[in-house]
Length: 433
Ligand code: PA5
Image 1 (cartoon, rainbow, N blue to C red):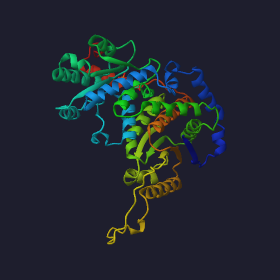
Image 2: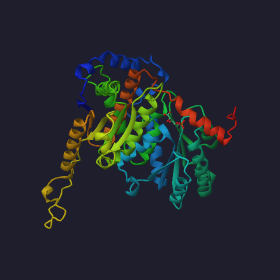
Image 3: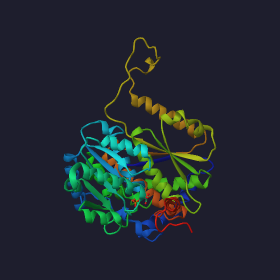
């Protein structure tokens, strides 16, 4: 269950200012529910969460089982919304070092950059390993994953021969359109669907996220159960809904000069979750000269770098802190009779206790320093909590973007770099005018 604590945001504005936004939040949420706003043909993400496994989820589970039996490594090829969700999910639940654990297949990500160094490193890692690949691209034409796909396909065919290679390629794409759909049909690859009404950054609860999660050993029915519970809880049209509080809180702060939002994680495993959140809000809101700039920090590490800026730099930011319920299994700080490090005052205390004091101390310092803080309180990290968080942030983002007056579901600005790059690369159809 997700709770939002906004008791640390008040400054020149008060609870009454937030409550005054009720009609706006209501209208934004209703616009989503009624499908009447800009981009309304991309609202499929609202119907994805389900309490019972769908046929697609059963196919995903079956494919994941085969992949887990046949592969040491699973390479997930994709960028943007076709990359950040699966990586966020696997790292949050299985941990940053999931690839070193040995029990599940290793999951590597490719096609999310154009670095020769990263590519050659991956090739070296794949040597002598049995591997399968999952090509994820809704359009099927994105350059970065397309280049990685061409090379990985060739590596598979050389290693296993055409017939076995075919069984090791899994394609997640549009059900009808695009070069990837066509390639899958011609080559006979198993395919999964990104529904046409689900945009990239809202696609984590489709096969985009679910197949990699299942291969990594996660329980995708639990992830979906979490998302479905969040959807049920957040259908409420009132400030009891945490998505309402979050969307209204961040808009109130934005209108009062807080143009930067820092998502603060106290769990290193949540780094890529921060990346997913950053894309969700950045691409959804940053347009028409509008938008809260979404940045991420990791505490306590970043308290020793950006902490100074947060405490005493320009007062143009606010924080959204994600707090997970602590682990039941504790790590204790032991007595060291020499006490050369001077830490004996912590003897018998748990690491959690120390972390909680660091959190409370940081919260008080930042609030005193003029940084409003919203707290997102979630249960212990697990598949279900992950699903809840995904839906909570997606819904909040849709509401918040409509409150800003922008279309949450397009990303026209992303095309500009592509056009220049294609022109420079000499892609047919992009010749210099
Ligand atoms: O959110 C989005 O729509 C984008 O970030 C896309 O996911 C990204 O550009 C990749 O696109 P595609 O899945 O078509 O390869």
